[in-house]
Length: 87
Length: 87
Image 1 (spheres, each protein chain N blue to C red):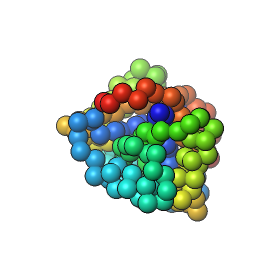
Image 2: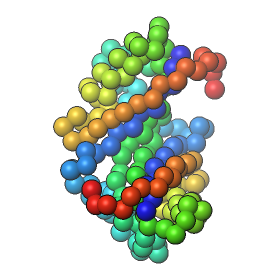
Image 3: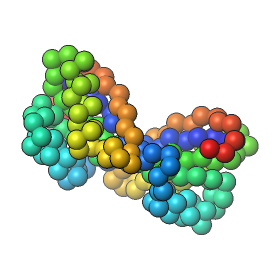
């Protein structure tokens, strides 16, 4: 069983109103030294799989088809093997 | 100038309808081997600061006050020093 940490971020040229809003709120709270905020998504997936290579290929497909919008977003992920005991 | 990568995740005991929806959609797409999805947030902040210790203290306050909801969410961040050239 694998734990995948998936990071989805807007491409650098894409406008990020959510990030701008967060930056404005941080300024209002007194954190004037924050110059830039970019908002993104983070997901943790657990998946069964025969081997890391196949798990990576599957994750790539998941990101392309559902988890990220490849037109405006970049994605990356980290994969680690975990024990299959329930949490 | 520092780049901070902030990760906000729901606490393990908190119900995650967004994650369940994503898992359902992945199953519909044929990724039946995905057993769990937890959705979270990811932010990249750039901030000026005199030293890493103060930047970390500020980030901790930002997370507690605005970026995360400490009642139901955990947060963690990584800090790295970057050059201040415009991107």
